Amino acid sequence: MAAGCFTSKHGRLCLQAQGDPSATWSASLQGDALSLKLLDPWLPEQLQLTGQLGLSAEVGIDANGQLGGEASATLAQAKSRMELGDTEQQLDISGTRLAAVLSAKGLDGQLHLPLTGIGIIEASARLPGMQPGTFSSTEQPIEGSLDAKLPDLALLSWFVPDLSAVQGRVDAGFQFSGTLAAPQVRGEATLADGAADIPALGLQVRDIEAQIKTPDLSHLRYHAKASSGDGLLQLEGETLLDASSGWPSKLRLWGENWVATDIPEARLWVSPDLTLNRDSTKTRLEGELTILMRSCGSESCRRRQLRAHPIWWWCRLASR
Image: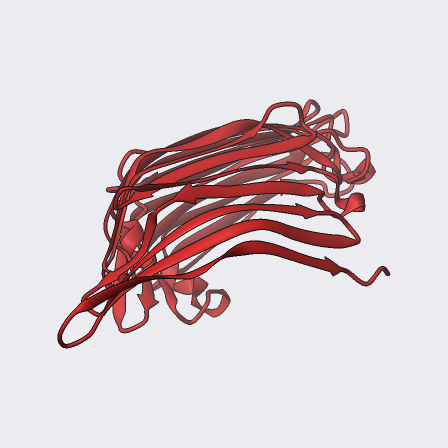
């Protein structure tokens, strides 16, 4: 048996091994109160992590020659700090846990990510029958899921400083299948009760709703809407999940008298009815866009129509 520990101001790490490397053997690794500062060399400059990491891992080969093991990592008193422009924002991620188990049945992994003040993200993945000696990403099946519940999007304004008074909630649930090289996704994500202000433009966007669905593993469908002033803007579309065909997509954007700017100097309304079609060789945008503006000078305000005519734009992409 061999064992050893390393202790420093950044925590304690112990390793133990026993058995015959040419036959059966086992090894374990235990980390206590490991400082997340150890990750600094691999993080972006604007991102910092503070807190402690608890680490536990066991791996070995049994009498049947089967490789197996399990590992887990847990964050305690953990916070992420990110510099956004001239401000620094902090997010509590304490309680985050990652676990994995390798056995004759394959590899299983789970992620539990609590975001204090925002919500929670849960994920699981399974690679049935996966063994390191015979691994092939093109043949390895995958099963998994991703679920997110974010009941309060107020903290989104941290990451988009131009927004304020952000509201809304997100619910998402996706299931994964296929192979590692060609994964397939089914599920949906929804945004409800959304709202946000854009002070620089004088906007108060309300009644924001959005939905993304993958109903049959081959199509991505989406719909969104938002109101501003007395106008309603809507977007709907569909994308074929086929990379070899250039992700063919069709989108439509339409609305009437949607306030796009509302500042003392001017107020701008847009009324689009536009359609975009895209494939691997070309992108085509067509439809109509009406823009109305009320400009205010020192004495009076004038309202005039800037643009109300058909739009036809076509671009052929260079084939490779």
